[in-house]
Length: 105
Figure 1: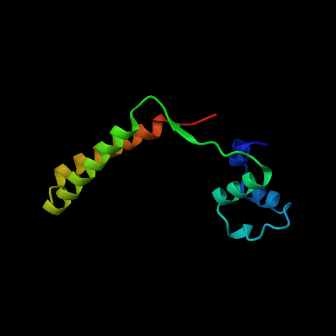
Figure 2: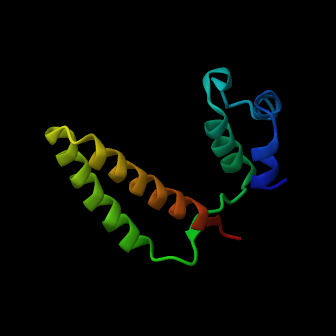
């Protein structure tokens, strides 16, 4: 079993799998990601990391930070048109970052 198989598994089955380890308690209060992390640790499964491919991540993040300042100014100035325009630009840039992010391996 690998990380992707765990991620596709239902939370009920993940809780059943966690019961196989006697030192694990409190699985009913855990979220799915917490259970997956716990099982990966116990089973010795390496969790893949995400990599941004095809775009310059740092320049996009710099642009988003600048747009957040413009957005804050628009809020204080009550300039609705500039606020909406800025929010759309931020959304597009975040969406581009998300599309370019892939799981490595």
